Amino acid sequence: MRKLFIISLLTLMTSLVIAQQVDYSVVFVTEESGINFTKVSSDNDYVCMPEVRRGRRGIDWLSNRILDVSRDGQKLAYLSYRNNTTNIFIKDINKMGGSVQRTNRQNVLDFSYSPDGKNISFSESVGNINRIFVTDANKGYICRQITSDNKDYSPIYANDMSQIYFSRKEAQGYSIWGYSIKDNFLSNISRGSNPCPIPNKEEILCVRSSGDGRNEIWKINYSNGIEECIVSDANRSFTSPIVSPDGQWILFVGSSAIDGGNFIYHNTDIYVCRIDGTDFTQLTYHAADDLSPVWSSDGKYIYFISQRGSSSGVANIWRMNFIFDEE
Image 1 (cartoon, one colour):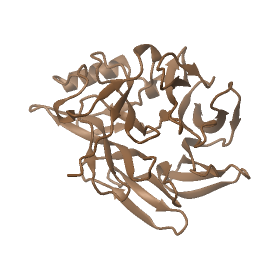
Image 2: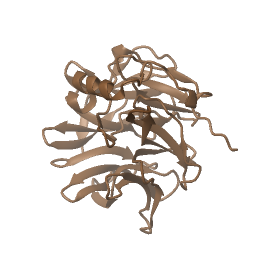
Image 3: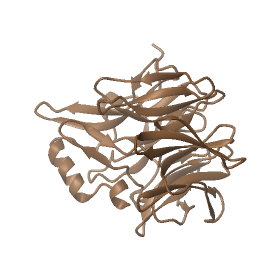
Image 4: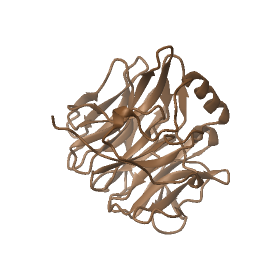
């Protein structure tokens, strides 16, 4: 499991060699001026970092959601690697002190809060199988398993809590499934991964492959079957869409490239656009990999995981204010 989330020393050394003059130690770069970055975790929180595979021609990364904020804005949950296990830990946002361990598993992959903040749905890897579970967000370690014998991940609740959407890796690719909380019924909804429901609409966002190695963000109306590509770029790949609390913005991760003159360094940054794909904007430009972004409950801030501010490349949770210039 560690190889899935924690950048190994060898990987880090290779990245540094390729990066040459790229410096992770700065907190922000010139292109990010006007944005306030605040580190909200410490190295002792052992925050997991999604695996990033970097090559001369591009970059690939795990898009699993490993960070979330409760809808009341009081709790920040994240994945942490401790004692040879990966589990969900929770911080009080107002206090930002120590963390409380919420799961007692071996290899938790990703998770999300329920809209009412009472439960957490998560996936765990055991061998070649990923199973989806539900657990109480505020009590003990008791878990209820809802899928089995497949490769399931990225669970996220419907806004009305009638279903839990998740991704399933199958022989022909990735698909979006729904688990009915009321009757335990499983249904195949559409092809794609990283599902995210849109508030007050019968629509979900998901990620689909463009066929040439890039990923795009699509909007799927599961009532009438209409499918629409929202975000696509000939030179960039996008994953991990998450809708703002007011339903007006999409936050997501995208590939980027830093031109160092005699070298090109590929990394991941955070992007945003309106729900219809307009006002596409790159928010971060740091050489570090900015990943797993989520909105604060009021939509004024963005939490994400990054190695920025660390000369040794240690990942932490950061918070940035969301600024959009209407001009």
